[in-house]
Length: 610
Image 1 (tube, one colour):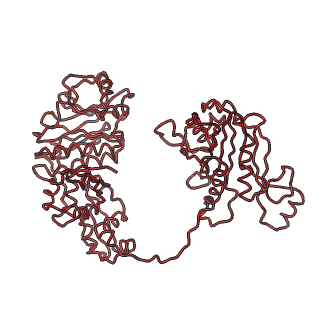
Image 2: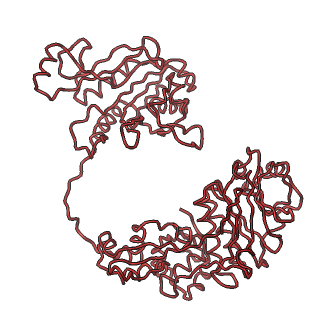
Image 3: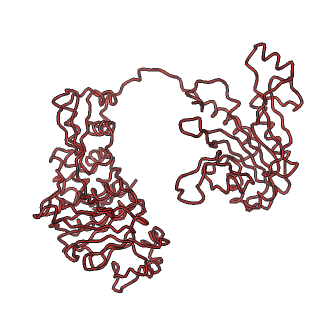
């Protein structure tokens, strides 16, 4: 959750009242602004934690509080065209090459801005807060702000090879090529973290004015030529992105929050963006989105008894524009401003109404139904195994459920037929490519990272693995597995065998011989050939479910020794090639099996069934 530093005296001036700290905390809590320890000290600056993008600066916080306290109405944000109309708008032409790096672009102009040192610092800080949050450290969106009077529109947004880009970057006095900048900024901590975003790309995004002067090289640095100062009167805002939705949100927030400093407050001059295919778009889009809130829905969710007129007043306190619907006495027509991208559904309006009313003021109601909670069947089985294996001296580990494709298949000497593992689309790193289909790789990685630990290393895990399942709506299913691993100077096959026996004993599953066809239930092991394990030192675990049927067919099957035993797991001594890939120098034995067959009959809502 982002933290916003504000000057208390500045906030009191904006609210027109000096509050006691305890009194202000009550108002701030309405917007989930959580004062931190520094706030309570006798200092002028305090920190508030915010959950809305329009509350990431003192301008937005003060504006929202003034509206909530009834000191003013929510402002109306407007696009003001220059005298020549749309033909006189500042234009930016996007080159086709930008689709290979950062394809989306938006811009806006703030006219007649008057900055003080406080408002200037807040303007810079808001950009940083947005960069660190919704922009995801500039990977999705990058913001550039410029003194428009130092540039000559129209602009062009291009993508060029780094050796062809030359300009004087912000806070520098010499001309650098983009290649030289990448080297120079490696030692600057505040910029080095952004370099990998474009460093390996054959082309870098760059923004030029009509005279060929560089305005910005997003997402790294702006030009020294167009930097903003306290004397800046007209501001050009450029926003580049790889995500079009976030692009619209960011340009709206940065423009609307500081439009109050314009010569005509809360007015923004739009710009025209010309795309490579010839289509045009006016940005920013300050359209108010119409929605409908129903008093009956709000009352059913909150326990209140408000009518539509009361609901409208509550919503207006949350910077929304609300009016009664003449055709429906239960409905309220709501206009959502461009500063509230968090409002997407009626439930969001219901939440805003509850916030305005005060969560602490909502009536307490006794639940209309009485139920007794119960643990999931699989959780009970997992707890049984966890307890017994922990008592045996093994330590539970919790590795990540995501792993690389190599770890899941190649490193375990297993082949991928394409129908087993769920792949992650566009994985951020090679370590998180698939959802694991076994617990073994997680246990082996844990041993690898704890090689300095005293032997023997005894670890286990009881958690979910995931498999593709085309029959299900979600195309995948979770399966609960339990696995244990022993690492020592000797293989310890008998140890993991004993772990299996103990788990089955506590699950009340008897051990039977593989040749015993008449036992109604039980488990047994049978030698198998598995490339994950040492030849001749691996076994398959089979389980025979107890038959609940007393039909003639079940009787005939028992007489004829026909069984339907299912494979539930494996155990054995791991192959040396597997251990080598995981950088483990000592022999290891492991056991892994599924807990799903041991579930008793339960309601489908508590199971993994469709």
